[in-house]
Image 1 (spheres, rainbow, N blue to C red):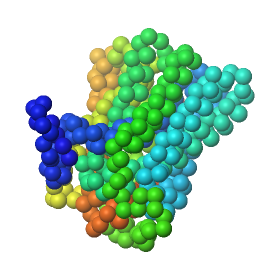
Image 2 (tube, rainbow, N blue to C red):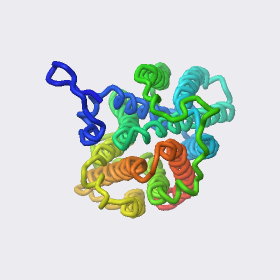
Image 3 (cartoon, rainbow, N blue to C red):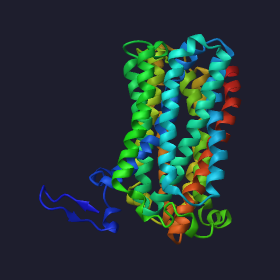
Length: 419
């Protein structure tokens, strides 16, 4: 690694020293930035579609239709189920990680160019056909993301915890930026009434992010450390899932539990109305998404603090931490029920709800980032670290899948308590 020496000759930073640098100091390294930017490319597609939920529900599926009502949960279920199945398939094929990074990004470019064309033509297509085609694109996008994530996490595990964190921070940035854009747009017009040109530009930005990720990946050649770069003939024997689970059980269960709990977030974010703040709901919803994503980013950054990197904060404690996040759900249900209607307390209710959403996002990013950063430390060699990239992704996708299914249950609970 190299760092600048006050504008003079670069000095060499040994890898064990690099692990001690802060996130901001690490960004001076181009390889670190490449991992971070690919992390952005991993979640940008998901968050782009998720943040545009109001646009789809209002402009495309006209609010009161069955397609509008099931769009959010269907999108999450299709995405997470296809991702889970594809991740299991990928994890059993422990080779060609470098190729997967590029292929996944290319597929994202294809999907979002086509999605932009769908945006232009949705008014002349039957709602059921439009809905079906969008869900197919969501499935392809999720599999492309799984392919890229499988490859980049294999590489990051070989490089070390700092680079695993870079991917995690990049994912959080991908959540923050789209939600900020929608929040700003909401003051110039209802995001659900967004212009076709605006939403088209929004989708095509995803293709641009994927393109930049490909350029950085090719330029830095971060896959050079892999043991089996595109060489199927000399690949090592596959590492069994039993071996990996025995070493990583608390960490992968933490990842699984965290995502199951977190998948209720979009439902509450879209259904809890503003009470006292001088905002419309069309502005309040993007604000909540922004607040949650800022908390998520904060949690991933502070995961690098020595107290959390310490062996004293071991995998079992991380798992207990992930389980405790379940306590957020009854709090959110109280806000859905309405609470006090006294004018002097309405603004305080909104403020407290915003704080709770920030904490929910912070703990999500914190647990996920700590879990992924500890994975390389629990494994014995680079072959296990490469294989762990796909193995951990199985628990990401299955956690998201179960969380999306559970979200259907909460749709009915929220509807019952808000009557």
